[in-house]
Length: 300
Picture 1 (cartoon, rainbow, N blue to C red):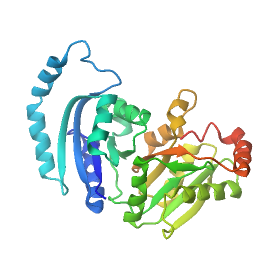
Picture 2 (picture 1 turned 180 degrees about the vertical axis):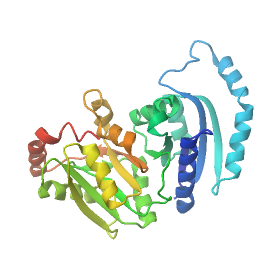
Picture 3 (picture 1 turned 60 degrees about the vertical axis):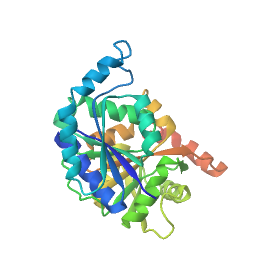
Picture 4 (picture 1 turned 90 degrees about the vertical axis):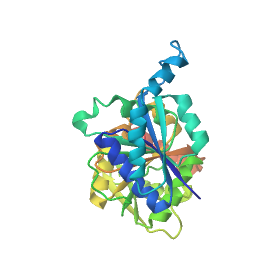
């Protein structure tokens, strides 16, 4: 199966880091890249009233940028094409999905000191997360070589299944042929919860039956901090987070674990779309018992 990665890119360090990391993964998986250059990312089209002629004029003015992007393509070790657009909008994101069927959207995350001023990647991250697309966020200054040699899978006790787009992760973990650690974070020591987290990962089919998988549990009152602690303790070069449909809407009322991990992670994070799965009566009762202490924190 041939994969495509769409990389949101420009000529600044964060985007360049993401492009190089994506190229390393693509070389390993024999995938191809699409370099997407946009000036803005928004839920609303700024040309809805001005008209398409203004959009075309803005694109025509970017001819030098398009030429420079082609020079980037020529230096990459894998096949790549360039997409130029004035705005990353929901309709365009869905159009890209329909045309390229990408396994991932790849974004760079600037250093925290400048991240607040990076409006394009921040807005793009919000837009793509809301649309529940598979995302790979690469922080600037990533030191781990692509591909990673250790993967951390953050899991809670809830069962999940993989959406069609999320099934790429199965091939990724299989192709990397590296150890994976399932990490469960909780406020207190709870072996039953740890075992259920591991079982949820196995039941999802995310990891192959013959893949080396270790279970590690970490005690931390803040789930995001626990995940980052687990990544450091296992020397993971990639963190995999399960993104459920309800999670993004939950950010209206909770501090999202995902948002905190994405903001502070020193290593790339793969945000994997998943669907809820029916659970057994025993598992449901256990999850209700845990809800009082974990519900706010486990909003991935």
